[in-house]
Length: 471
Ligand SMILES: [Zn+2]
View (cartoon, rainbow, N blue to C red):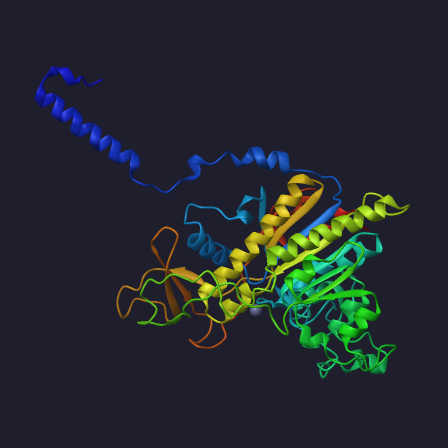
């Protein structure tokens, strides 16, 4: 130990050293893995081969590893962690589709319809297909199987309820565009007029899903063309079939477990959570800019994804408990899918702040699911994506000949550091393309260890079945 009493010059040196030491302690440094608990402890506790009472699937549309990292850097800092990062068991899964003309060959870049068919039914199919195989056959979905076995069911999204991800669980059509009865040009054999099952909107209502929440009211306000409800809108058909229609946050909050709920909160996709500058071609997009963590155009009456998730869980849990008090369905809870849809849509639009805001809102919804699972550990929670997407974190542009050729935006993050996000899978100003990369799948609860390693999207269907004890 240095002693101050050995003389004034020595005392001055000691004081200087102490000041340096104090400064070293207070200089902010990024936390590292050294500061985190050993993950093998959580992993050992997380391996549970039993049955789940409930499954909650969180699907970030287009939420590849880049999209997660961009949102983490911006909202938490590079060393921070999102709620979705806390799941103890993580793997990667492959997402490819197959070619429609030759299903023996892969289509390396999937859309949400083919990938959704993969995880919802266990079958590979072609882009645009909604739970039909390449030969046009309908295949059972995990929601249908769970419902038949006595589980309550829910389907929640920030897109239109008739968009590909919610559609794959409760409808079967050869083309994803067949969303409402007036959208059936590419599905002429499926219309109710010719005795078919109808559009995606009609099928979702006919499927009797307990809780349906999202956008897309304009599709449901189209007129049914055949069958017992011909001449009514799909919305009116749903009400005739016992659904309570809600169109804003307060009417959603007022629903009770005795009701079957159809929530349609916007005519199209739900409004974005955040706003900010679009990415642009270099030399634009190089000034560090912050996002605005709100959107003045978003009506305050519109629920957030976390609100819809919390309410869906509350309703489904209570419905299942009510059944359990009766004579049947002992011990069976629910299957719920929650989609953060506009991560993908804002990636297409080269809109980094829109994309980050949707990822943050999706993460808040995941936090709701994890809070429920903490009290109900017999819940399998899965967080994954359907496919990768465009956005990449790239180096700050160096010179006129050293920069991304795509659109870029430079965001000032939580670390107060610039992060350059590039969109370069299509020309600047055009809709950006999906990518064919494998994506993260993370899980906790019964059967969660099945996501470890490298699996395929279709394996998730079998994981759900194993967890719910379905055959
Ligand atoms: Zn997309």
